[in-house]
Length: 387
Ligand SMILES: CC(C)(COP(=O)(O)OP(=O)(O)OC[C@H]1O[C@@H](n2cnc3c(N)ncnc32)[C@H](O)[C@@H]1OP(=O)(O)O)[C@@H](O)C(=O)NCCC(=O)NCCS
Image 1 (cartoon, protein in one colour):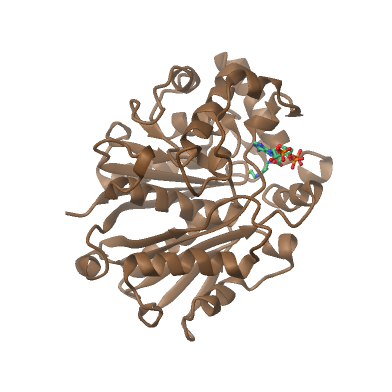
Image 2 (spheres, rainbow, N blue to C red):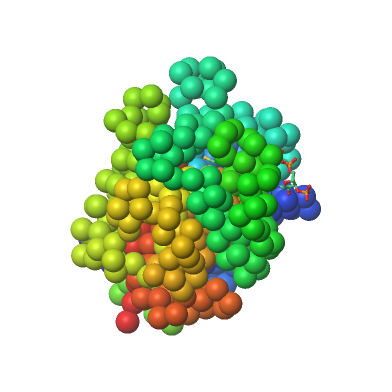
């Protein structure tokens, strides 16, 4: 196995991108990543593209070949990775494996989704494909509904409050205000979250990540030659993934995502670090309760302790650990296929010291956590600056 580094990253602004189609979004992010890495399209040997439901959102399948075409990669192998909202993180892991194995040297990993061309109801149906159609979605539950069940149980078992959940959204919007790529550059108060309309009790509109358009891309290369492309390569210290039951009803516990726990344990082992060593982390906050679960299942807080810590400001920018400095899915936006790749781009900027107003002081070790559906897939990566 070879060490692998990220040598280039690129992002589009997330949000309602009505003047850009799927192709333009792919090109915008991909070309930015190639430029960042000083890599010519002729050097790229393989592309993995994360997209969750482009067929339902814009009628377009076969998105990896389209991405390669848009970026001028002539005839290289291109593979689409679909793993619900973890499509981007899973694509990154496939790219990592391709370089680590020695099969390919320069690999581009992209992620894209264009979600705002359909109605909210059509988007809800498309996103519902990440759950068990027969046993969950046909029975009438939606994704906000599934996470609301998790939230209710967490409140019952650990006394978590709606105000504590709201504080996740407040923190993430605060960070998003400092991110030029974010969908919502608007701060919120706990009171505003509490007064927003109920989507699925106890989750309110401002507890939810939005419907978004956007794309992200990273360029991977073997660590030994990474400096050829970038003066500050970021080493991927660990790449881990785990699965769990698609149906919530089959889970041992509603208050944890076992796939996150397993992927995190494996990642810490690979990287030879513990949760305490992580300075900055992008976690999958598709709903505010999901960030609370993530902080616990990643081992950063004990079960039942994260909500209070977040409300007390421990995970704010330059807090005890800085969480979702990009604004997370809540504030930065959640174009589902792009999210896992965007998380990696944010951590790369943090570890390079290029995160501007949202820079975490002395950030050395970063982590990303990307979840598919209600937790049937979890992908965890750990990174550090290569010296
Ligand atoms: C929460 C949700 C239902 C809101 O959709 P909606 O009711 O159709 O909302 P609208 O599009 O009518 O937007 C109403 C306003 O709220 C804003 N808004 C919408 N969703 C928002 C969100 N999640 N956070 C903050 N503001 C939001 C809109 O910008 C709009 O503001 P404006 O009036 O100033 O233009 C939708 O964003 C949603 O389904 N989110 C969850 C997505 C999801 O499940 N992802 C997968 C996770 S696993």
